[in-house]
Length: 81
Ligand SMILES: [Zn+2]
Image (cartoon, rainbow, N blue to C red; front, top):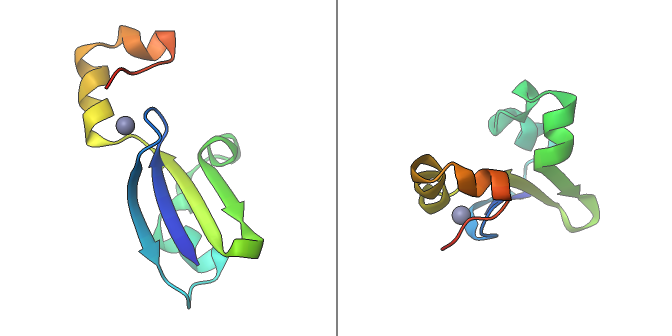
């Protein structure tokens, strides 16, 4: 399983894990995804089983800072780089 973390705002690849020996259940356990509610899971996690890739939406450091300094950016649904 390959796990990729993408920033939901700037679509930047934040990090990736290559664990060929992991099943999807392993990846969810190691990444703490079991703590998400079903709605959060639907929103944040996508699994491309045929390619063995799971993507997780997150927020990169840059966007985190931008949102903290300019919360109105979130409301507008866009974050400027
Ligand atoms: Zn970002």
